[in-house]
Length: 125
Image (cartoon, rainbow, N blue to C red; front, side, top):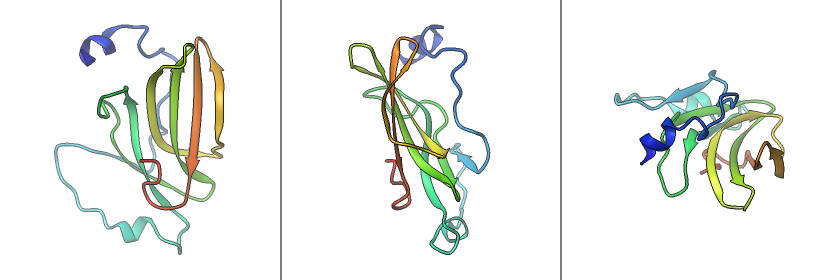
């Protein structure tokens, strides 16, 4: 079902941008050890965030799963795109600069909400 949904051109608009590509660690089949003390903690003012470029309701992250590091003026972010009837269509997570909590931003035929946090590592669960 997911494969068919992603194959439809109307599923994700072509001009939709995901993530920013730097300071992110997409997950892969290989395991890697990353010392969290190098990337987080009060001495650096950074926080680790969950990252997922595509997560449809009732499903696990299907694209861009990993961790990003929010530094200085960045926050962990969860964005949710809703259809006009209010049903969730897509969620995305990551690090975002100058993040602001907002509701119902009109984007074509969709409404977008952003939630930002910096309280602790992985606060955008």
